[in-house]
Length: 136
Image 1 (cartoon, rainbow, N blue to C red):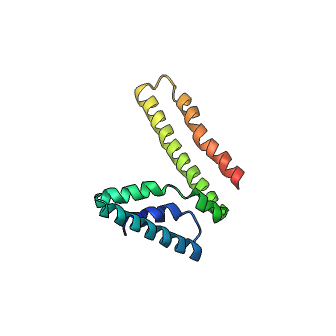
Image 2 (cartoon, rainbow, N blue to C red):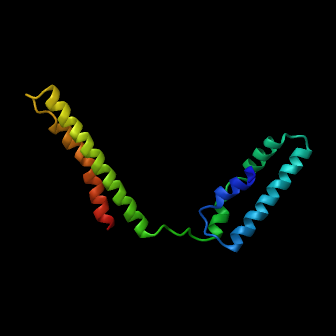
Image 3 (tube, rainbow, N blue to C red):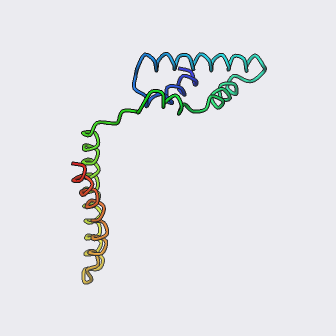
């Protein structure tokens, strides 16, 4: 796949697949390849010509607006993601708390200072728990 095709595919990846999208992408790729051929014929190096054609093309925000709103991801995707974030934060917090307790009791058993970092670390999973419950 050429650099131009990769660039155009990256620009259009958010849009839903359709015949119109495919035709438009092919037209743009063909136009850019023709521009590259003209630039190369004019004396530019091929890689420089490709980069110039891509830069001159710009973005496709106007074209995206013609396709209508981009469909959002389904709700179950976000619920799953929030659940994974919550699990990750709970496990990470537990490990940090265990480390703080170990360091506290191993090096300074007469002074209990580990409660301070424990309270600070607990805000992470608690915040994500509230986000998870709100999204549910």
